[in-house]
Length: 541
Image 1 (spheres, rainbow, N blue to C red):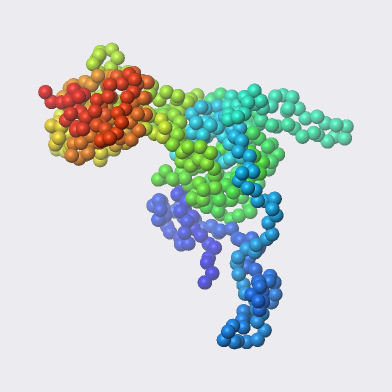
Image 2: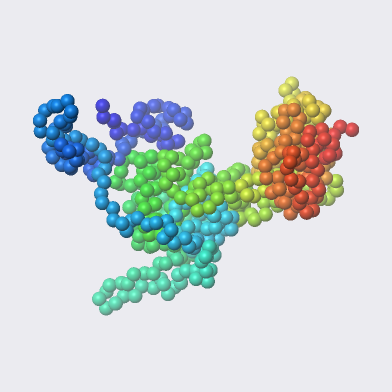
């Protein structure tokens, strides 16, 4: 039975199936499943006829018929027949298409700087010419603002070339390159647009993009704007302008007239991505592609979209705070464990080269020389970067039958476990108290290495015993009250020393492990929760 080409697609989450539902089986939304038709295969992919001779040789063409064969047991005469197959026939490949890997030049590629050091580090040193970078994130998180400001900086020549490129050879087309000369015959010479940046918006008009560019300071004559949702027009702009950098916002709004399906559907997104990748590779134009996400945080559209592009970056953060994090999920030209920090404001996006200033408060500078009760600092590792996290806790007497547990930046289930461990092994009675625990500036203390800092902050608030401001705690707490080792401890200690911390309580190293020594840091090793609380000075007197 032939497979039906009719499919049904959810406009909310991108789910597709062969049956219509009033409610999407994936996201649960009502009335979002609509019918669409897959693109018909080209005539070149149809089944070909192959003639099989007596000697087993396959010959293309011939009349359609059944295959016969003179086997050892005999059979009908003739020995010639035809069989239909859907395989693609092999063609002769010239030797010029085959190159030994030792003959391929291994010179470094001159990358294009984005103007943001944090962005360049996440990409592995800059944008590789001819690459396609997918930047995804939730609505309103700042994807378009980040890329528009990047376009403005590249157009102004702020990014320059990285790698083996020479910054002095940076191409910034001036007024001379924008002048078109016309001869007597009336034929205009080609305009030299080398160094131009093309920003194609399928969601906003050029006036709206210009308004936002003026607010964030991204107005430059080398920045070209276009508002269209037609894929053929976008490809024509790329070939005509031949920009230094192209930005398409977004993949889910661009449609092709050559294939069926609604905007944002699997067929359209796949066609748009494939066409942009072909142009980027053939002409060496780097493309920054904006991608939408679904309710569960995954990139909307087919999974092949992430496989086709070269780099996938997630732009994330809490919309209620100014902190934004850019991390590479996939990167063919660099590491995938780098994280860039940005600060979102009304004037645009600023990179944060020292995140410690964001995640630490100044509450204990004036009135509490020994620190503030209910506060403890820990250090997490995100990629190659160690980030300080300040944990604050408030313990009050409860007037409710069930004590309240309010968390921000900390897993509530993890908090319940730590409260039980504190009661059982640390002799800290918190089961009947209201607990409020939070982090600073939208930091996340969900890594197991933050357990000791959370427990110390709760004990400090319960016993009114402040922890010195230049002390920190790093370690995972088990149900038995043990303080377990954490990975990359040296990274955390070096960042603590850089920020001025002098004492850090850490788990006891494993047998046979080398001791870690960091200048300026006094390392206090503990193996259990009671000893850790005693070292921090927050045990019950």
